[in-house]
Image (cartoon, rainbow over all chains, first blue to last red; front, side, top):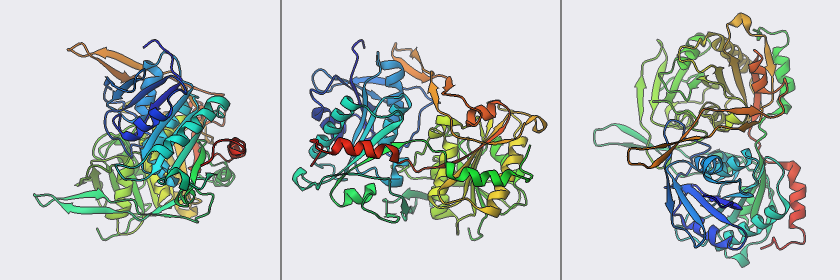
Amino acid sequence: MTTAHDILLTNDDGVAAPGLAALERALDGLGRLVVVAPDAERSASGHAITMTNPLRLSEVARSPGVRGYAVNGTPADCVKLALHTLLPAPPRLVISGINLGPNTGTNVLYSGTVSAATEGTIFNIPSLAVSLRSYARDGDFSPAAHFAREFAARILSRGLPEGVLLNVNVPALPRDQIRGIRITRLARYRYRDSYDVRQDPRGRNYYWLTGEDAEILKPEPDLDAVAVEEGFVSVTPLCYDLTCLSFAGELRGWLDGSNLKA
Amino acid sequence: MTTAHDILLTNDDGVAAPGLAALERALDGLGRLVVVAPDAERSASGHAITMTNPLRLSEVARSPGVRGYAVNGTPADCVKLALHTLLPAPPRLVISGINLGPNTGTNVLYSGTVSAATEGTIFNIPSLAVSLRSYARDGDFSPAAHFAREFAARILSRGLPEGVLLNVNVPALPRDQIRGIRITRLARYRYRDSYDVRQDPRGRNYYWLTGEDAEILKPEPDLDAVAVEEGFVSVTPLCYDLTCLSFAGELRGWLDGSNLKA
């Protein structure tokens, strides 16, 4: 591949997912696009990368003028492989989505969609994750695609600070019923979901994770999950500076005069 | 299972890994232990959880008095399944490790070891991840096991703030050569690793991630990767409050008077 690209598209629902096609159509004219996405659904793959097995890449048809590739790996694999090997130059933007189902609150830790965007920020490329709060296979992606384009255009013109990505969640509403955009914080969930315990024909148990029955802790209007429930587009700036400086002082107290020494 | 447990042990190198056995031995007498770990190596699995397939659980032999279970899933699956289904009551502590290989800096995003501890904090259980900076299969885990026990004892007596986990990395040195303990921040890496492009017998390419050639950005003594390189035990308090509040103000400026509206 010899042409540079402006925008790398990926997702975790797989290269054939309608949300990815809707995103691709919505970006038409905004820059040169390339698609590198998993060959099948990889939901809840978190930030997994494939090290013990090789990856395969196959070309897939996209819109006219857009190259597309399917990878037998995770969303993070797709971005890593594209940036290290496939693309002749770094794109100006990585977009992951449009995911079928929201990626809000604690769930972003499990999200392949958000992890693909995180992989972009690790390479210092501005990155955007877009999700639709719907699980209907025939969901209407067009309002989410509209906002994806608007945020993409804004990032291309203004950039993002190093290490920051935007996580956008769009309610499953017609565009004229969406109440506006809220800048939000990540919610924290308490999970009440559990495992179905079933028996196989040989009488042995197996365990299947049931749906996500999650309760929002301390719900406030500026939490992402609350905003999108209330009909707003939620946009959360995320960064992965995980060090908890506020606890470092107390931790120092643990070490002083203790047997916690070499 | 009817007995409550004090400490849940897991890892990402698999239930048979020597680092897990060393950890189990080191904790002897500190509380009632239970082991729930992947049935095989799951390195770089990030925070992946298994939703589309069922999980299987099989009992495995551990030390006298310790129940052990192997799960055909990721480290996060092991903790989730243990806490939702297997254990009659939440343990007082989750420990993940001892990992063969360090989990420092940006690498914690890919780390199954750290993700298992993160899953503990999602359940509000104090959690600890321990890794040894060695890739030698016959590495000596005993210094790392010593520090794992010391930190575990401290957490059991003092607790940890909600949502905080400790990420401990131990140099591969005899205990009397370890220079002390440093409280650290997560380093940021720039990855120079790449993919080996090989050809299969049919002449088709496949791609294999090569070793981790990572450069520490702005190295400082209080970065985890630097501390452990210099012969110190690194302990980093981590929390997953990913919202980047510092960028929220500028982001608000994007929305004002723009066409970024519903």
